[in-house]
Length: 250
Image 1 (cartoon, rainbow, N blue to C red):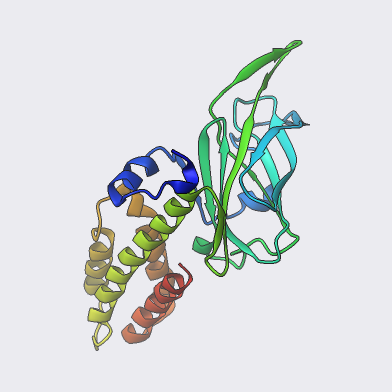
Image 2: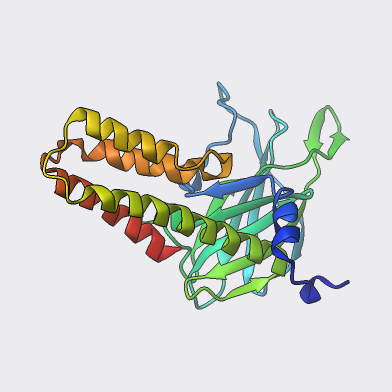
């Protein structure tokens, strides 16, 4: 069955998503640091290489690939947006291990790759080692699977695209539940430490699923960062506004 003809059922999608073992949400400092993972001391041996690339998109191209010869980590890839629309998420496979980068979760302003701009980051990989002289190098088979644009259109393989939108929808549902919880507290005239800790505990326990931990921890950070706001209504409204902004982006 051809992938372009396959539209997964919700149950099949959940099973398939379990095989997407790397989900990079928010990107953070890894995008521009140029530093390999692993906390290496000294000067790492970084080497450029020419990868084998299969591209399922028309204009999201790998323009550079590097590897750290001192570790068995995945490669560092630079990918350039050749479209006239901004990219908000993409999926790449390295030796069968799928990495998803979704910029909409970012708390800073880097929430897309604009036309003509590039993204650089390190990607996980299943090992495929090959001896070359005295140095063991990794062989990487890279597939650029899919992109999602700022207008929520997409291009590439349908399954990773469905996975990206499934994760976004799940996040929206969870954050909407948290907003409902915050709305219960907006009308409070007094808000002491005990009430705040009770609210924090309710947010922390709103879901026990590990896949929801990122959104919950994000809201808990917003609650902690609002401590300098003395009026309880403003404090809750500020956190609610942050949740509403993220819901609107997803």
